[in-house]
Length: 138
Ligand SMILES: [Zn+2]
Image: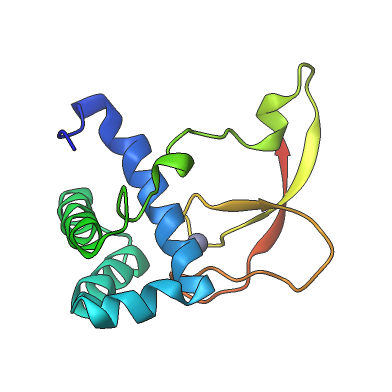
């Protein structure tokens, strides 16, 4: 994996934060982190995000986590290649201006969102707070 270009750093960082949120919520990352001795790294990422996070530290920690996950055998690390394609929020995909309702992470640092569907209310994996329903306009 080559180092990201400077302008790619922010979107890539956002993708990593959203992936961390998703993987922590699913519980899969906790098991793997314990196996590869990466729990302190994950704890530090979560603490940095909860505190508003310095970007330099976050990017370096995500790089290290990716390196360990790849060494463990997970292709692509925290953000698998299939998830690397940026998917804009549903409102941005509509030709006209529309408003859709999504579940969004309550943390300003976490860009994760989910389409509203029936079922249990999702929670942010980073800080455990319930996700909030939010109107998104294209
Ligand atoms: Zn989140």
